[in-house]
Image (cartoon, rainbow, N blue to C red; front, side):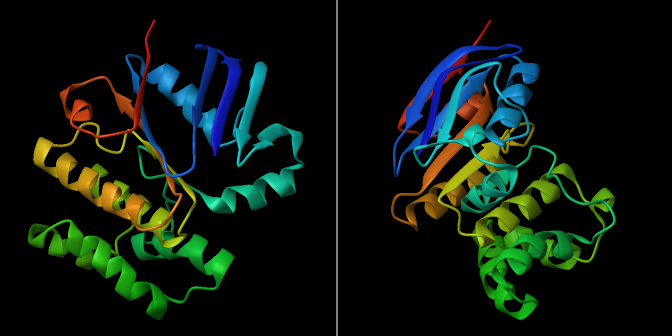
Length: 215
């Protein structure tokens, strides 16, 4: 499902790994610069200087740009800062990809989004009332939850989490980990890839394989 063959770009040097159908992996970093470079490679925003990146058995950069766009409809990404459009309200940000690509209406999205929020616990009921806010009025945690729900609505085959639990209180991070784990198991063959700081919180995240990128 994901394969890196001797990929080099900037601080990423000769990286090789493979993540099979249904697998989970976490990549631990001691450098945010290195993490950011890998995230750009995974998101198709940077080409490797050497090596190949394959999704679903196909070389990502051997495809034309419009073909890569179609490929990424099967891949969900949760950016560390949420990656929300600044002049759209949280709810509009959350719904936009699923509406654009799958024709999902606000009424159809309301129930699955409510279920995602409910899984975060009764203390998070206020999230529903925050959906009318612009991104700059939301906390970092709230922006990540919006990005998480946005990606989950697309029902991707691959989901990439970019420092999703970093900088959060342990109990909050643990709840998000539980949510992503349950979501992973809901679709046969789904792949989950977590980019994480090398810290105590990330050590609590269960995964089939762990890769450490250090200087």
